[in-house]
Length: 144
Length: 81
Image 1 (cartoon, each protein chain N blue to C red):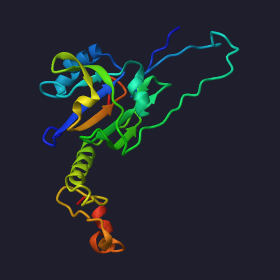
Image 2 (spheres, rainbow over the protein chains, first blue to last red; image 1 turned 90 degrees about the horizontal axis):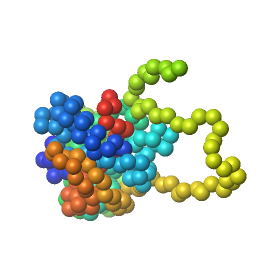
Image 3 (tube, chains in turn blue, brown; image 1 turned 60 degrees about the horizontal axis):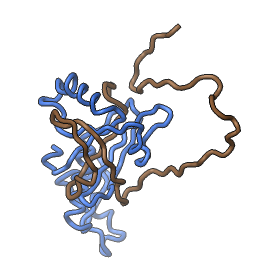
Image 4 (cartoon, rainbow over the protein chains, first blue to last red; image 1 turned 90 degrees about the vertical axis):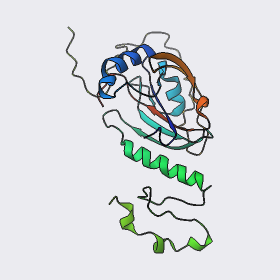
């Protein structure tokens, strides 16, 4: 899916590349046919994680930080979770699709709360001031 | 006596116990400026070793410029979630 969207995925933890190899070869390749398709990067000492603000000094590990970076290298969004709760990949895909649409329209369209591909966008401008209620209703915030 | 660890989703770590070793007269602690990166700002570039498609590699984040990139940190290999 990410490949289809033209997104490069990078995974990073404090583990060495040797441990990455063993985890991929011994376990993950049993979940994902052919193994992990994206680079698994090593951040010994959490130096990169510290710069991104997601390194947990006490535990000595990185938290579940996820950053969406646009083609210009600008961070468009991030999410950080503590270790025991996994990510919602569908929501990440939705956000990427929303950011891609906004970029494609050069900001001419914005995606309101609850937007999914195919749903209505908003066109910010003087004519929309005070008129969002005509374009968007609260039930549109929820998946249907 | 060592005790058995029960494993959870956090990666177990240790650390020094008892009195701190080293000089005690250190009074001034260097306060590092810590800031979370911001949306709308450039992602800090880095270079890191890694594993990809059966090979060990070295990659810079900036190699991905021109494409959307999803950078995912996680607590550790062989953890559960």
